Length: 117
Image (cartoon, rainbow, N blue to C red):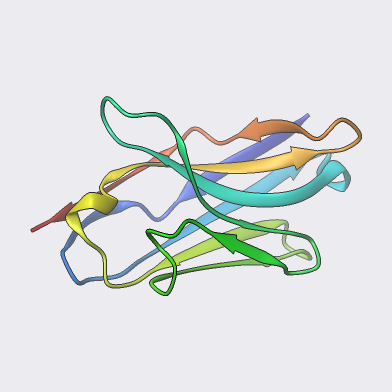
C-alpha cells in the first residue's frame, strides 16, 4: 500500500506562482515514475508532468516552460513548481505514482488550484 498526500494548492492571481508537494508513505520501494495530473470541472483528468526515478521529465505542451517537476527520492516526495499561472490552469491537481511490479496507479486525494484573472 502506498499513500500519496498532496499539499500546496490555493488561490493565486494570474501571473503568480504556486508550489505543490506530494509525499509518499507506505511501501515506497514499489514507486517508479511519479507525476501530476489535473482535472478541471466537466473535463477529463489530463497529464501535467511526470518524472522518473532517474530524473527524466515529461510535460504537457500547455505547461512546458512554465511548470517544473522535481522529486526527492530520499524523502519520497515529488514537487510541481508552477510559474506564470493562467486562469486555464485552474483545476484539481492529483499526484500520481506508478507502482511495481505491474505499474498500476496510486493517486493522491487532490488539491485545488484556482487562478483568478
